[in-house]
Image 1 (cartoon, rainbow, N blue to C red):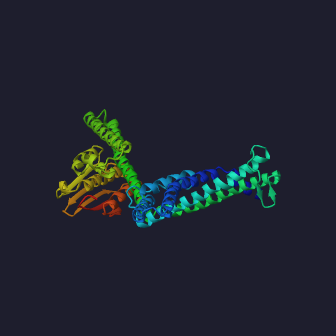
Image 2: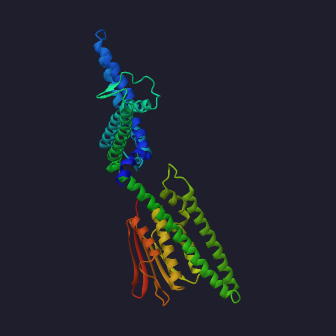
Image 3: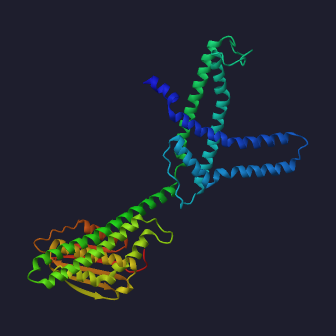
Amino acid sequence: MRIRAVVAPLVSGATYRRGVHLLLGGVLLLPYLLVGTTFAQMLSMSETPRAPTLVVLVLAVVVGLVPPFLRGTRALEIVAARSLLGVPLPDPPVTAEQGRETRLRAALWFSVHLAIGGLVGALLLIPLVMGVILVAQQFGVAGGTLVGFQLGPLTEHDSVWLALLGVAMLAGVVYAVAGLGSLAAVMAPVLLGPSPAERIAALEARAARLAERNRLARELHDSIGHALTVTTLQAAAARQLLDTDPAFAREALVAIEDTGRAAAADLDRVLGMLRESERADHTPRQRLVDEAQPHGLAGLGRLVAYSRGTGVEVGVQVSGSLDEVPAPVSLEGYRIIQESLTNVLRHAGPVQVALRVAVDGRTLTIDVANPVTGSDSRREGGRGLDGMRERVTLLGGAMTAGLEGGQWRVSVRLPVGEAP
């Protein structure tokens, strides 16, 4: 195990990938070294005008200090560190503001990258080249490179010892690169990792995506679940009364046709939204509201008619103007009523339902009550009720559902105001 740990850095691909990354820092360092050397030579010459040269030097320093603080430089460094150092760094959020602390950390990493890269470049130019020459002379391919060479007690005639020294120098360069690469891999997450603001932005984006998926799931559950319940009961009623009441059977078939078309339209709309790329002028949530306007409270009459066609007698009491309800609240109110009636059909069967919808200018109130039958298997933790509670919570409203005086009652209060 110890031998494997000693040999691992010499044969690991990560060592050489990290070496390439560090060497890139040395390449970036070259322009700074060339400019610095040029100005040092100019200032050492007595005939060079001092004032203009110093002004140009200051401008060169300012230009040289700009790249480490650029957002694009940090993004490129993150990509390079992720690919070559093997560090799992996330891309910086495009919308997140890059604060002072983030810029300073990125600039510090840029400086460290250049410094370590310069050191790796020096190792490749001196010890590595020297080691190759010492090993090559053992095989007689170094020519007269080592004529007159002496290193301590070793001379050009000690070819075996010089070859061993060359091997040691080559191994030392690889170990040095491995160590510097490991150090860079440890420092990269600290200096290039996301700032607190970027972490918050990433969490908010993830929460928004999750909320949108949950919203689409609720839409599919409520619309398709309602349609399947209605069509199943309508088909069962039509089958039973096909011979004795053909008129009712025809009405049931028409209701099944209309419900199926509406459900297909809902399914196509939601699946289309999943396929679409997000437009710049509409968020997915707003687009959902825009495309679902036919299913607002304005469609309450049609929803009640479908339910009545299944044998459920729905008594509706509406007070206030439903047209004053904002579109998002109207949509959610419609879906809540739809899910409530679906639950009645699914769990209680053909019973009487009392539906009250009231708008007082500040609050939309929805009350749905039906008598509990022996076949009613509803529980307060059902998936449909959970979806309704999510809708109410998103709008900042309140909801209660459960048994009350021998009836199953759903009561919802939604604030009527600006669309969230």
